[in-house]
Image (tube, rainbow, N blue to C red; front, top):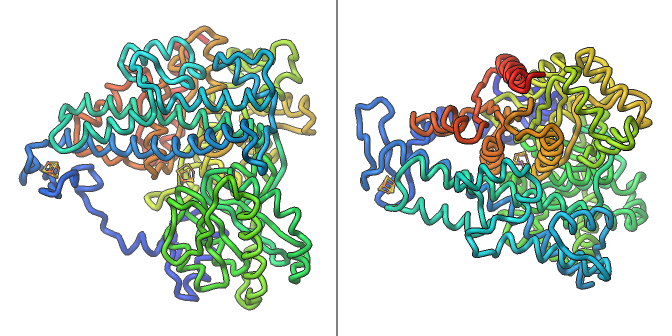
Length: 636
Ligand code: NFS
Ligand code: SF4
């Protein structure tokens, strides 16, 4: 079994045994059934853009070299990867739009389930977006901030860029992107344009197609920035909180509800209402009342804001049901496995979809709208309590595996911690330690889990290599989940793995911030949309040093990139100037033109580039070298 189950997570290994015993197929079994995976698809050489196809280009040069319409390998590969960037941008930006529209309604007093929880941040954003606040009520300001944000979905003037990109990236970078024609003027229009230009018989010049894709990736960045920032205003800006992660957070004596997906609009209200309904759960026999646990990015959202424990990350979401003690899994949007309802059927677990545009066969659907948020949350929780009464104690098997995780390091939280060292100039201690080399550089881990690798393994190996070399580590998304589950987001990990000078700095900041010890080895910045938090920090550093982002000793790594969203994130990472490691091979290698464009070509244009390396040990060392090179460039 160990060969078949591609994971490094002991809890997942334990639960796969249950799946075997009960003859339940999991993601790992379905992966095996797909082998060998199609070579044309893996290289990006299969085109299904029109019904004359599918067309495939022979990678060895022996069979056909052109699709029926005449498209060659470079056009086909460029169109495929560019469409992925657009899909990623659409996904993040839909999430952002949903939050912005909700905030607009909050501003009008129309959504009693929500309020403005971080007024300071609201006013800071208003200033950033150039919104006049004089003489306005707070709710009016919220309405105006949301309305101006929504202009990023509506502006038709090509000469005006999106507000959030201009507000978050260094001016130097915005100028460069503008000169390259890579700045989106409108998220929706950019996504539409990519779909249009990659239709049969349109843009067939691979570089032009790819650069159009980069504009889509920057639209993705804009969408996630606004999602992150407005979420903080409505739900609170994260600050450090101690919690636990991995499957052992499911409690046999409680009604267990997992929130899975991405958008905090529903999960926030579920957390609120669960407190009120605890007694009902106890009345149904659950000694400890209601236990909310998180999965994927919704998990990250509620973990960083409320300390809700994280059950698991993307690849192992099915495992939560296999414990036999999960009473309901409530999902919203994105990265939710369609297999969940079938696995739920083998147990008593209710799998509940909530978004009208995201349903699953076999799941119960309870339609969520911000206007009925409280009623929906009550119905969902009641459903879980009812399911609890049907739980079969003989089927309960919760591996007692969990780790302490200190999470919630928003850029504001990091600055607050630093201000304990220098209240007047909080960035100074960080800048000084980077300049003097105590901190060699910064690495942001982002992205998913994938069956192409061993779940969570590369994250740990690369992080340990970087930490030993005194690189400060940040993480989001399922990468953050991996670190939390494997005990790399706590103080012991800093003691164990950080290089001496990094340890000294983390200890100094942690002690000053009242943590009685160092900061955790990996700082949890949140969900995938929260990658923008890392950019905020990097921009502050760049501005402080008077350089552009591509000059900083800052790298990104997505060891298990999988989703279209991850492709979009990695692509804007490159576009804003970051060397960006991918641990899975992108489906572009069928075209040397596109492959070159993503590496040397991108480096010439943006300063950032893709670094593809599947071996985590080598990847870690390469990233250390990249950081050293950047330091040399800065003369530090
Ligand atoms: Ni990001 Fe979050 Fe996870 Fe990948 Fe999916 S949950 S938005 S896409 S799999 S990190
Ligand atoms: Fe084939 Fe061209 Fe149609 Fe693609 S767009 S499927 S290459 S004919």
